[in-house]
Length: 328
Image 1 (cartoon, one colour):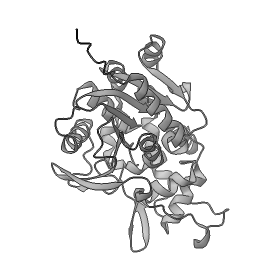
Image 2 (cartoon, rainbow, N blue to C red):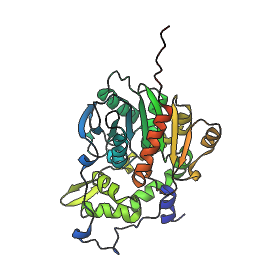
Image 3 (cartoon, one colour):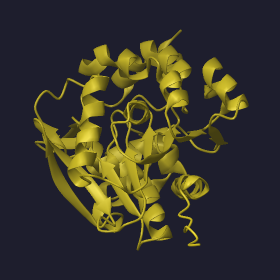
Image 4 (spheres, helix red, strand yellow):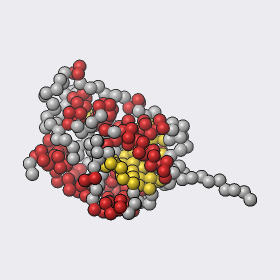
């Protein structure tokens, strides 16, 4: 299998150019600009947990309704959910709370041992951050995870590390296809541009490659994926040094998802991503399946309103009913 076939196998996306586009107008004045996080979340704060200072985006923190916890994939940041999070919160801004976390070694989170991304550590991170924000929680919780973040979410819910979970939502992550593509991912990582001359050029590359198909979302999320030094922008998260943990992220994911003690929703870009265990479980009605074939891998960025509507509808369908007891 040649280089570009390996990249395709790893990502299930259209093949990105190996270098930033030279055919489009890339003058500074024509490059897309960054969008501020504050247009999509009400606040951000730092949550200190163990050896790390986690960056967390929030809306509706003081509300009393359901909490939607959004956990991103490898190499992304909490802002990958920015447009979807804004839409979720706007559905009921007096009740809903939305939380999007920059995982260890991602986004604006800082700390020690950034190359240690074992699944056990990330599960502990997510549970610890939640407990710091919502001690003794009694509110309903919907845990949402994309790609690697979905694996973390599934383990957290299956192990009951977060209290009062009403639902689990995984976005474009299936054990079978993830395990099959592991050997090709280093090829994809090495084929990406290693640096950019500006944030605008980084955004443009994501659009040109269709890594993100929604320009507004790319303008919000991509700036958090790169960091600058001497006017050169490089990738914030160093993924190759974490390769030894990749298999552990996904092994047993289908079983963890199916056996999670809560309602479950799986959102995929295509049925080809389902493995045998999930096909059987889906036919048995053990989880809800939604397909959005117009999207790429980052479904929550490509179709943010559609994903937000699915998540809110999923919560409504599974919310607990408070039925008053009739006094005799």
